[in-house]
Length: 252
Image (cartoon, rainbow, N blue to C red; front, side):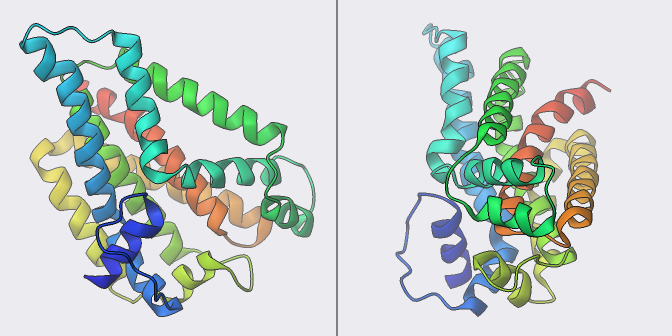
């Protein structure tokens, strides 16, 4: 279970067993358990949605819709420490700069956040809040459970299938040392999470994977591969894609 606990500690603020001795190989093996980490987050966030908008109203307690939705929008950021949001902002600053490959990579490595990063992240937060606000209350727990699972399968997929753009870095360890069985384990975990929700969940997952592949290919054309920041960007964008796609698939 060491790889799972490493993934949990690295990708979230949840620390069940503190891991201090991490090798590059340990990082690589942890990639297979990213969707399982997503399941842990999904249980917490989806459970919160159930309590706020299903359980409490059934007991006669009304939670203000906008306030409850804002809490659910912020929960993923709090539980992950903003890890993927930071990647999104850095990636946006670099990829939207209009510079050459080396300059893009330098901008993404800079810890400071530029205007593009702020605008993209702010727009994404507003979009997530709007999608949750407009979603049927009964579908909210399901969507918020599935989103982190599917999005972390997408991250696993692009880590395994696309080259790393830098010669070194934490993300490089993920890409280089992920075992051959990584994607199979991640896919099996995700399918187990999707099956109770039937064809709409599976359809949402498939379309989200295609979206992730398109993003990864577009980024690779620009900088010759992916980086840790782009892994985070793809993950958080895929969470939004699930929130958009699941209500559509559920209504078909």
